[in-house]
Length: 191
Image (tube, rainbow, N blue to C red; front, side, top):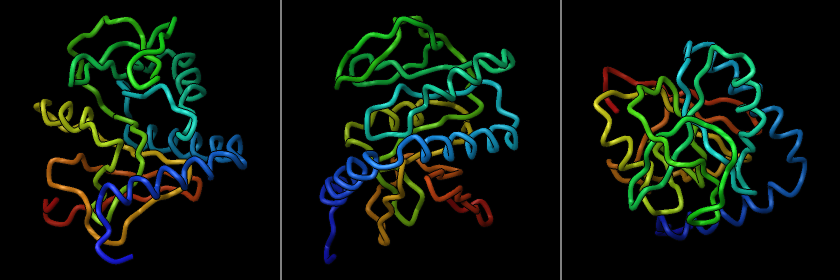
């Protein structure tokens, strides 16, 4: 497709993800969950940022349950406050809030996240995130004085062949889809 814009690509990806999530979602979720657990072990992560999923996203709820039962992991989820994102410990009950996203009550705290597992709408050749276009995750990660490992997850891969993202869009270390795990290789510190 000629002169594809980020907005056009986002629309194509949302359509693909909605379609892809209708078929074999349980099997895809199980495969992705197993891949994420492998990366968590490789990275030796203990403080993990997850999310409460939308219908077209990888269902992270089983992963949250598994990690909470192991007790050596601390699970956090995003909480939207104004135009920024805060980190809060995962706890029930959940409440449907802005954009029909479920969140916990506000009990934000200063915590150093080892690993962030983030849903994406798409990505491009730079491994940067294309989300819904609001920038919550971008602003959150820009505010940190450290860089946790980042895993992007997606039910099925939506990847542009050309660069559509900007330098402020967050970059992943891994992308996990129903087809497997892709690891970003950093050459000589060049991002």
